[in-house]
Image (cartoon, rainbow, N blue to C red; front, side):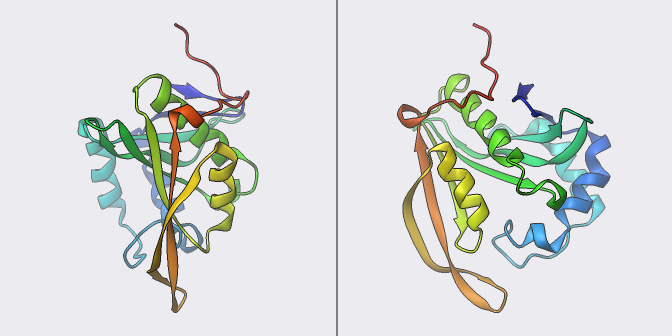
Length: 184
């Protein structure tokens, strides 16, 4: 289990299914996530996704849980791992009730720290849509830097938007004080 002062990350459980489906299907949340058309997902497809999490070798996904009340808040994970070159592509989403509180920055910080200190990865990468300013601020707080722009890459809200590629190297990582260090 990975933890910060206010959240912990744990493997997904079947008990998370209803909350995952509800939060993931909120249109305000989904607009930031899917590269294709943001169709709602079925409970059955989410159930299958949860079942397959323990079998996936090239990705590691975690439920984000608020410590104070043990509530599921969202998810984060390493969606692609390139072991030869030591990098991983990360992603995160939070249910709308948990926006603008710093929970996402804490959770992603714990994941990044795990990648660098336990998985021996050298780089964390992500992609973010230009209209997701809140996420970009969070990523910049953690040290991510803009590496490229995919021009007019995503169609949302009746128009095209750029998608930004961001990266963070292990040598640039400065572990925030809210992340619990791992015992040696």
